[in-house]
Length: 113
Length: 110
Image (cartoon, rainbow over all chains, first blue to last red; front, top):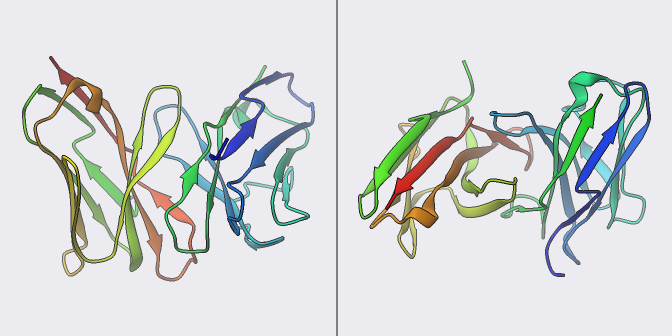
């Protein structure tokens, strides 16, 4: 497909577990963004990559959250020692360059029991 | 106070009505985005603008940089326009990350 792909679409896990969320951006897009959306609210920024490097990780809430993009394409958002408050929809977006329209994936709905 | 505020929070209209959703922001921006989110989560970018006005089909977006205000208009509304409409900005000092408003839930009844 030509769009941004996120897997899994749903993830249910127990408090304290480790989770990985994957994002496949549109081919050729250099910028990749992670956002988090809680129910009834607008998305909040987590981190964005330009190429392989994190250009801005100031939105990561604490050191349990980490993201990588080792080859400048696929990105993985990693959450350690999950807490119930981490439950949200995690959205990934990509754009051709910085400051271009962003294309969003359908999100991963994460539920921490 | 949120940096990006939208009004109204909820809007119900009858099919065919002209709709306006407003967005005000309090920071310097490089661009303003209007996004559409359907139930189930998928977000689609409608417009990205930094000045003036853009039109796509029945949708029109305007921005007044001096007043830090933007509007999204929908002409001849249709039930399929029912969705959450989100205003977001790229701040002039924060690269290309988006700062979002809380969205406007639009319901268009037949």
